[in-house]
Length: 483
Image (cartoon, rainbow, N blue to C red; front, side, top):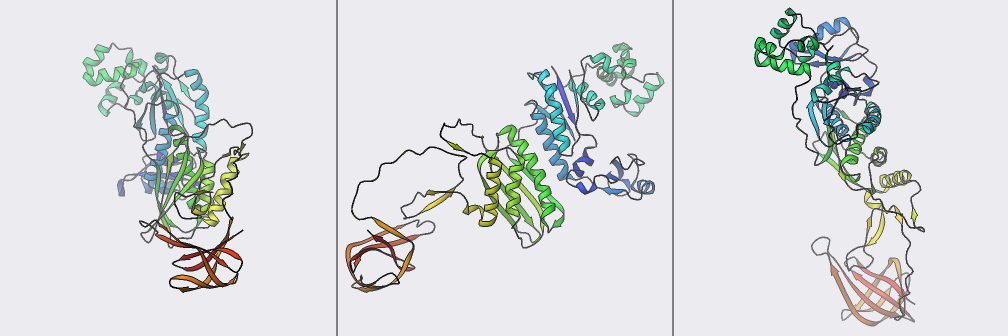
């Protein structure tokens, strides 16, 4: 059995800087605790004179330009979700071991192939602003020790556990103060020095705790991991520290959300074909919009372009104080196209163009028209366009069945005089004259449970021409002319 440990050093600091790029390159420190008990927990490379454990006053005395920040819970939640997804990309059993640290059970994984995948995974996490340390070993504990020794440029693999553990310092066993002092009095400063003692003798001196320390130093301490459940919903949310009135800071947060959600749905659902964006406003209102994509995708840049194009024309009543984005997983289609089918040459450009159109006309006004499931004439709906246009079979012309009705779009308004509830005279810019009814009226109605509609159709003759006369609640119209 083999295990891998993925951890992000200075997790609180990097998860905070991931959503605050302006702080990169500046002396920054993250505080731990409250009030006078607050201490420096992590600091950036630029704050080299600051050491963890200093008070805020001591740190500012050493570096007047130091920026002291509190941990970002939302930033840590997002970075932790991204780290879990990175673990799931290697194997299905992943444990959230600690803040900024996950353990992966590599049972059944091709280790040779894994050696080739880890560098790309580390590069992807670094592009997200999260440096990743990776250690691989025969037990979760040894893999964690290996991750402590992994540098920023490479991962640490443990093939010989005994040789690897022997020079490690006893501080890595996390002994209590009395245990540390006793080990130092005995001259035991490395794992190898501890395991040189017989296990029974060591346990008789320190009891059960001593037996545990000896097992850890020898690499014989094994614990079962507790796999984290796979996510049921793919959501990202954040309460903004300051109300946002401009587009740039909001887009930066959404870009990070798209990168994480695209990575996540790519692992579990194959992609997403629908996004739901919710903006929480300062006036206690919410703005929500659904975005339907023509095809499921796991490309973050495509998801972000759809949001960016729509938000470019958005104006809210008050500043934005919170944002939430949810992606709904969908399987990406893998259909072999026919020889004469027409497919998309550039899917990314196609999606971007749809996003720009939706930003101008509204997402509900962009799509491919289809007949609605209704008896209402000319009723249609818009559906997301297909990525391919299949060859359409030739249809036989319908048999002749009387004169052809040519509809007027839009229908021509008319003034109609009624005699005994029947049209008798008509005046309109198109035609005027006495009306001869050729067909009794046809009444059609529907959608009484939603937006009810009703229409009354007459076939009439005015002069030598035949017309379709329409009566709706809005008035009388000439709907078409018969050839």
